[in-house]
Length: 91
Length: 91
Image 1 (tube, one colour):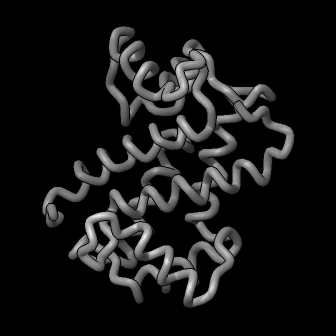
Image 2 (tube, chains in turn brown, orange):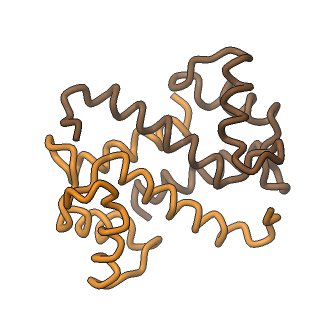
């Protein structure tokens, strides 16, 4: 398996570490995940979490499924990309 | 840095390995990336590549920027998730 494929598996594994068998993250579980696994990439307080959770929970069931979680990862990775690669060409 | 943060950095690094300083993937570069880094996760032929490239290239500039690339990663990771976690609850 390539490093890129390993990275994708890691994302799946970390999601499941916090979601358990139900495959959904409640708000407290998302909070733990961000506090433990994304401290370098997301700076936030409890208000931000409420807004973030509402944004991610597209279907409004008060839980974050994997589809909704991967949208967060894409958003954060994109933000990191723009930060780490300052001289890239904006289209 | 957590394993999850490392995974996000890996995605950025692999993109840049193929895009170079221009920060965009031409079709041939996307083909190399998929052929070298995603062989276990994407099965495809040249026709599929043409369709995939057109789908990803949302702004129609014939190049894939990081924003468009991360959408591919999200799509493939989601598909893997559904495959590896067969008994998860569909909403």
